[in-house]
Image (cartoon, helix red, strand yellow):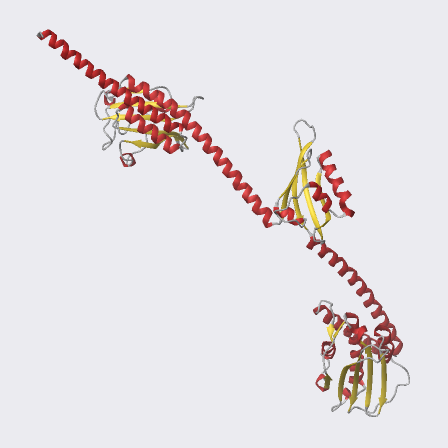
Length: 532
């Protein structure tokens, strides 16, 4: 082989080696591109996606380091935030301010085009901005420089990919072409990720709003419901089912709903629904429902029909339901209380009128009338106070005596003897309260309590009825140690109240004995007339 032939073989081998290296480099780049494309297509979050793009860009271009700066607008102007970094620690940028809109960076952040320089320090745009006039001291060494804007299909600049190397002439046209393509893929992927993240955020917000709404409905015991107007498909929440006495795992159709409404309210309820569907009116109604266990409850239902955009009629109704049984029962109790109050006021006025008439008839002077009338009205008031303390449910017999005798200074001279206390009705409480007042007032003015040493003994016991009689309370008021007692020449208010008033109010039998030892009053009152 001649020397010339040897040189040709050697040259051929060199070219084959270079071709193999170029082919190997292309294979490596192709594999890297495939790997990057797969990573982009995997749909990771934005941070992972950008890191993949930057790492891939460093690998494809042979750069020593790369970065992605995210394009944002701050209140004081444009600013660019480091989003991801490859080939260098993040701390390499932490001590320096973010890139500004300088002559070198402006084309990238404005999306005007690619900036590629074999030696950026020799570029005419480099070092023109005060105060640093180039890279600050301690900055990563950059000579070879490649910056590609990342632009969406709509023309919005998301940011820029930046690659650097401390040696000159490291990035050629091939690297620039690869990065332009990579930036386009990155823009599409970032847009897709951001749209997906926005959709997830919106979905999370909706779920959060639904959870808050459900919490609010549950806290207020409000059941939600929805009705398909055409198919009559009915969807009810667990609380809505409970309002109608149904379990959460039970099927509850619209027909079940209608059937559960009380027959007396059913037509009114269905008419209200049809009116809301036909006219788009408010659906707001209260009606009785019959639970499967037989209990009758009250439900307050509210809702509205949703009209179609083409005014073709309502497609659905939605609303809430609330169990208002306790409120309805409270209203009924209030109504009964008002009626009872009216009845009691009328009875009290009749009592006052009777007291005034009888007192006027049995007194001779205005002063005497005033004193007697005021005393009796106060006695009636005391009895009402006692009943008020007991919620007008009645009072015990001993409480009546203690309450009426509280104002009398000689109450310590009144003794009691009984085997058990009795609970009396409001009517019996008023009647016996007035009777005790009359007995105590008479004893204080004329009887045993009008002089020192006099005393009163109160005894009561329940007697079993005979064959034709019901059980009765036998109560005696006996005075001793007072002035001699003489039977009155005419019947006064007190005697009339005791003998006739108690007979009329409580079917009582009352006898008054005026003997030399003192007044003795004996009452026999049927238990049935005293019980609450």
